[in-house]
Image (cartoon, rainbow, N blue to C red):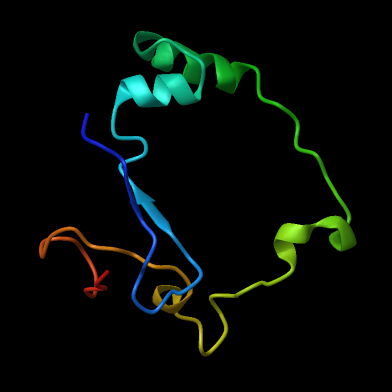
Length: 98
């Protein structure tokens, strides 16, 4: 039930902002999905029963695939691609400061 927070200046990531706590309450998630918070479980159940078929596009139209990174690449390091802010010392992984 806490606030969502936006961080616009992430050390080492000049062109990325990070939002945390966005799904921090059932009320907020219900608002995002246009669903009463107490009906979210039913929405999930119904969505599985009524799955939407994927839309296939050709590689030249798949804008999201303009830059790809493969875990098999020798220099692959997810921590260098995306910020992973930590809130407390107990958070997992190497400490990335904001």
